[in-house]
Structure formats: C-alpha cells, structure tokens
Image (cartoon, rainbow, N blue to C red; front, side):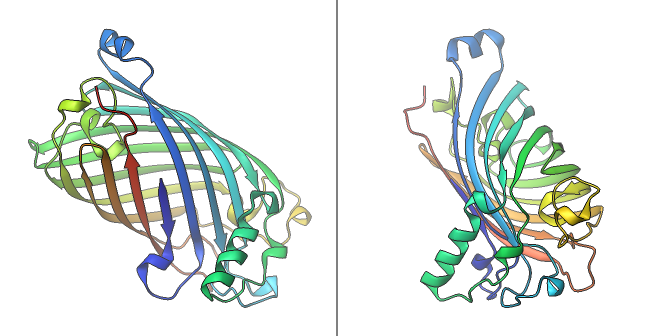
Amino acid sequence: MTNENDVYIFQNIDRYYSNGVFLNYRFVPGTDLVDTLKHKRILEIGIAQKFWTPQNLTLDDPEDYDRPYAGMLNLSFRRAEFRRENSRLSYGLDFGIMGKASGAQAFQEWYHKVFGFPRPLGWEYQVPNTLILDLKFEYDHQFVLVPQKLDVISSTAASLGTGFTHAVQRFDIRTGKLRKLSESAFFNALIGSGSRNIAVHNYFFLGYGLQYVGHDTTIQGKISDNKEEYPHGEEIISWVRHLRVGFATNSENTTFKITYNWLSREVDQWAAGRHAYIGLELALRLQPRS
C-alpha cells in the first residue's frame, strides 16, 4: 500500500498532484518454473486513485486556475522479469477512467470537510469522463560501485496511451546495506524462491530524473484537436525534472519506504509553480517466504 500527498510536508499546501492511493498485490507464478528458468518473475495487480488540483482551491472561476481539476481511478497490471541479478524489465498496462466517475471529487470534498480544509470550488470544471488505456515499460540496471554499500541504478521508462504519453530517464544513488536488484526492496523483489535467506537491509537513496512529456490528460484534457471538448485545459511543459530522496528498510515480513519528491513546473502557465510531495509505502508479505 502506498500513499502520496503534499500534506506530509507540513507546509499547509494542497495543490497540483494532491493525493495518490495505491493498493498492489504481487506474486511469483510458481517457484518451480522460476528455478528452471534461472530468473525471477513477479506479477503485479493494482488499483489506484489519484487527483490533481490548482494551487488555490478557493477560486471558482476556471480562468483563474493554474492547473485543471482532474481525478483518475485505474487498474494496473505489471510483469517484472529479473533475467539477471542486477537488472529488471517491467511492462504492463493501466486501464481506468478519468473524470467524475473516478470518485476523486467525492473523496476530496469528503476529507476536506472532515479535517477542516478549505472546500474545493472547481470540481465542476474537472477533466471530463475519459477512458484511460496506457502501455507501460521500464528497464532498470544496477551498477555496483562498492559491493553491498554503494551503487547507481539507471531506470529508463515510457508510457504510451490515452492518459499519459512520456519517456523518462532516471538515476538513483543508493548507500547503506544493499542487495542485488533481484533481492532488494527497491523494486519489491523480496518474494519468491530463496527470499527467506535474504538478509535484512536498509539504505538511503537520492535520485534525479528528466522526463519528456508528449501528452498529459490531467493538464490538457483528452487527446483531441477540438478544444471545445475541454476548454479549461492548459499547455504542458515538455521537459520536467524530478528529484527524490528517501529511505527504505525491511524486516522478515515487511518493507517500508519514505520518499520526498520534487518536480519542476509541469504547466506552461505564468502562475504555475513547482511542486513537492511525500510518498509512504508499506509492503506486507502475507505468506512465509520459501
């Protein structure tokens, strides 16, 4: 389970990428097959709800917004293959809906009322109901600098579809008690045959990524040349920087990560700014590791 929110920064802000909740179930499809093929495969099924808002939630005129209201609810399917101990190939798809049907409006209005936050006034202008189908790809490789103490992980990822079309290159430096990628909490690989013998490990990481954005439906509305379909969209900035720093640790049955994320401007609008949020992740191993 993962929750991402800017409220964890304790700066009294609630804007842009405002909240994300992720529930994921991961499993290895048959340990005998994994042993035969000499590499680990992990399948993942997930559900997520995310929403985005402008900087000032008390404005009711969409002409004053620096980013549209947008909510998304989707199912995700991933297949990760560790063909080598220091590399991972992940691919899959996201399928869902963006708009009022996602439930994001109802959820934010509810918890703002419960916790005494200002009532968001612009959800009636949110990105309309739109089907989302995105193909996802990621390749990661670990470069060991000091065995079990210092490494660099290169991640190349892409998304293509009706929700998000982008490509990103990221590098993460890790230091602490480290393991190979196929035995590391970094990519939730602590499941499957032989994982019972993996020692407890923890580490700090610092990452930097550069993303090229082709289309972002949460900013522009759905892919269309007809602006009348969603007149309140904004223009994207093609290149977005992403800095992150965090800590991860695991016990025999759990993994915990905390990550601070900082993003450069995503919207080509004079009033739009940068954004930061914190992600909290807790993974539970439901069965004894074999």
